[in-house]
Amino acid sequence: MIEIKIEARDRIIWRFGNQLAALGDGMARTVMMRALNHESDKGRTQVKRALVRQTGIKYSQINKAVETIRATPASLEYVLKATGDETNLNLFNARQGKRGVSAAPWGKRQVFKHSFMVPAYGNRVYVRTSDERGPLKPLFGPNIARELVKDETAAAFRKGTAGIADRVAHEIARVLV
Image 1 (cartoon, rainbow, N blue to C red):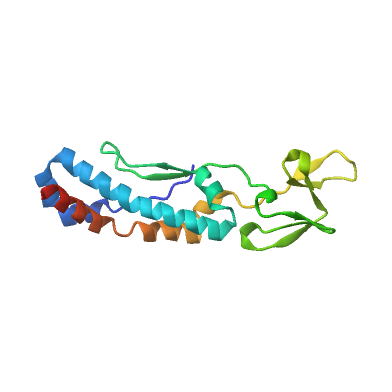
Image 2: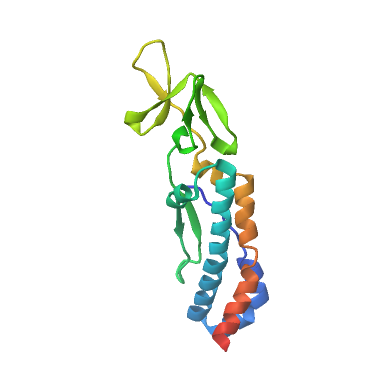
């Protein structure tokens, strides 16, 4: 499991401490939970879009592989879990050619020499490991879990969750009115 954490607790307590204390512990936790979930959902959307640009994997595949554990009043923590194995090159618009398979992992098309697609195995891409017929090695592209913590994606999450303090102010006003 790979996690990206944003620690805004101290800044929020310093800015809204008196108002949160006036709400009481239960309602203050609910306010914090709502703000965290709202802003982190925005960050999650930006992360998924960045992963599509970064890896070349379709949004639907990324949506299946990224699990979200939202905050609750008991645990004020929002987690994006990237599950998923290595991605075979067949997910990247692979085409069989004379010289090998052409695929576009990481958004850049290239030819993988001496590789071939096996229709019986769901058009997965393989390469032989020896001159013999039997031993095959699958060819892989980006792994979503590893790509989740790389530069563009991590920055997208931080940018998407930048408004947590403002959202806490909004939620406090909503409760007090």
